[in-house]
Image (cartoon, rainbow, N blue to C red; front, side, top):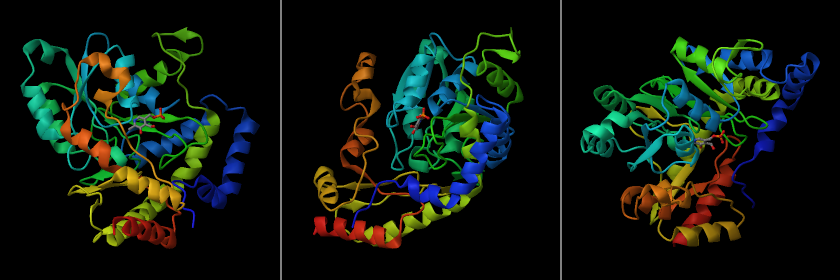
Amino acid sequence: MKVPFLNLTAQYRPIKDEIAAALQEVLDTNAFAGGRKVERFENVFAPFCQTGHAIGVGSGTDALWMALLGLGIGDGDAVIVPVNTFIATAEAVSFAGTLPLFVDCDEYYNIDTAKLQKTLSAMSYEQRARLKAVIPVHLYGQMANMDEIMALAGEYGLAVIEDACQAHGAEYKGRRAGSIGDAGCFSFYPGKNLGAYGEAGAIVTNNAELAAKLRMFRDHGQQKKYYHSIIGWNARMDGFQGAVLATKLKYLDEWTKKRRQNALLYNELLAGVDGIQTPKEMPHTSSVYHLYVIQSDDRDGLQHYLEQNGVATGLHYPVPLHLQEAYSGLGYEKGDFPVAEKAAKRILSLPMFPELTEAQIGYVCDKISEFRR
Ligand SMILES: Cc1ncc(COP(=O)(O)O)c(C=O)c1O
């Protein structure tokens, strides 16, 4: 049996005609850059996220960078970022002219709030004055401990930008990803839970002033064509992507339900397997399982064995940010973030997508048990 890591064709097949009709409308109306289809998507995505506003942009990386700029965070400032995330979270901080400060993760792979508190209280007066925000990342589809993050942010006067790029529709105490902080940032990279057919992203917020600023910023700082009130950028969402995303959003809750069922089945079948640790859900959260990540002794051996048996897997992520060459200039060392460093050597992402069958999950788990025996 072959089990792919992701199967976008299986998702596309049943909605093919609907997608074709939506794309045809873009062609018929020439709404290629921004335009009506993007607006329509924003109007359904904001309530989906329980927020007042959604601003469609070019990518999740754009969304993070623009959220920082929109909140007035830039040159000479510092922002806290979890050390185990996709590099885009930190890149956005760096591109804003800001210093990323890393914090280790907890057992749920999200920013460890006890360590966040320790980092904050150990800062000098000057360091605290530079620090402007924290970016919790809802990694693998599970929301970070938002009550504690919001409390600490309140105490230290920090903005909170949620990196919800992997967490479309995830919940924390009934509140959806992106709706708790000052802004939430989403990626619609094709492999995401809500994926475009190209590059796209969005920022959601309940702050009307911030939303208006970001709408201007993504369109060269103009509200009226060729009248530029601020220096902006071209970060508009593509019209085709708006059409695809609005069509697919109708199915997202159903797809999430299937992802959760798949995760439960994996949990069940891997429960007794020696040396395997299945992912845990933090109380009061509902993960959307963008990724299903186990930990294993001899992870590399297991990955190789699965590959030989037709099962595709991934590593998210093999190197924590402080050990990436790109961030070697920050002065961090091996051993600074022991939880993330240990996890990086043990984690393995198993196939996860809504259309995964029980037989495929059964096969993957059989092969894992076989390897561990
Ligand atoms: C956690 C996280 N942050 C940011 C991004 C960046 O999103 P994009 O690839 O759309 O720029 C991604 C997606 O790859 C991500 O997973």
